[in-house]
Image 1 (tube, rainbow, N blue to C red):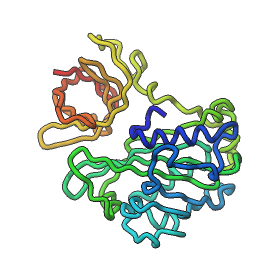
Image 2: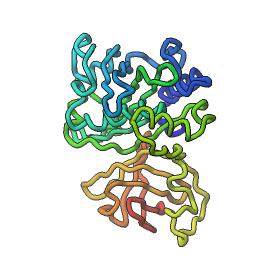
Image 3: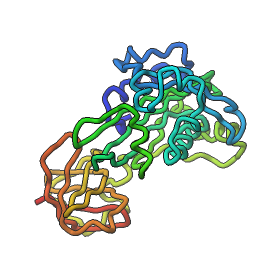
Length: 300
């Protein structure tokens, strides 16, 4: 849950988790987003068709909030009854469907951050939370919560999905188990995958995102001698150098440095500026180690 950046999406996931009790995932009848102080205007409810047939699930709009309609760029009546394949712009189609299929196959919530650059060259992110609902064995509905975030000014929501036609990137994705699913253990997820996907391949237990770059892991070189203890933060930021900008995720951080995950790490110079979400001041950074897409940096 701690990986979800938006407080109201985190509250929505907590409400879903509380309703799950001992079923893994809850029935939609008891779901009330307003109990989590979450506006239904930002949500889309999808009916899941053919959920028990491997690779054949279809997702059809049951209801949609006005702000979600604005982002899709359709009329309030237009999206109803349409499928995810019909509504998702082509570059987003695979990302959208893969997340929904994972939600059905695992019975777990799925949280994603999709990043793009708008017409004004501003970096914009769509935070997408998918929550499964059903009879405890089959996922029958998925509730999707959408949040649009920009570090560089206001967002024009009307038809914003068209902005993701350019070069959308899935910069973060994670699977969230309900407490009930956690108690059942990874074998419960393996059994669901076998039933839903027609395969007996075992599922791996969900990985705590804090384990991705913990101090002392194989991703952290032994030669890195820190002057201050680091803490896991999982914050989105921007690496700036010259006229270039690169979206990144800060995995852990202290007063003197950080571990940064960036898809284009190989092209980042040894000195650059780092701007974190919800902050305006840039930090001057010097790279002290590199490993694949990870950078260890010293501030100042």
